[in-house]
Amino acid sequence: MAKERPELPGLIKPNITPIEEFQNSVIRPIIKMQHELIIAFFKQNLVKRKVDFSSIKVEKKKSTIKNALQKDISFKKLLLGSILGHFSMDEYTVYLGNASEYNRRIINIITKRLQDSIPEL
Image (cartoon, rainbow, N blue to C red):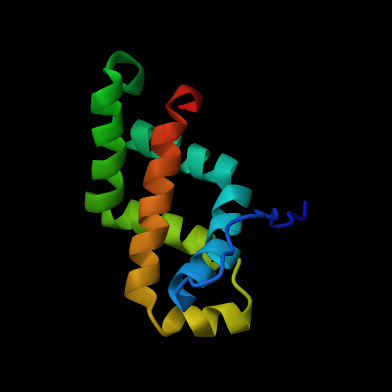
């Protein structure tokens, strides 16, 4: 099943930095396209860690999400790989120019997206 990157109009604005432009034109559409998979990865991570997510309060759920993406290095690498695997060679070359900044942005976007998707979890 082939997936197409969604178009996210309105994110590319004048006077934004090249990093923001790459984030908004490449990274965000890939994350949106991979949303269901990211949700599935997170659910599986909860099972693996034996976390009863349904029994905790919303604020604790948000901190659980944030901690999982900050402290669980193997989970973080899985998520980054699921995004980077959709880059073209040209996009990958741009990514390599500032990989740590892009990784930070990818994790921040995924964290926010998961926190906004708590009902799906």
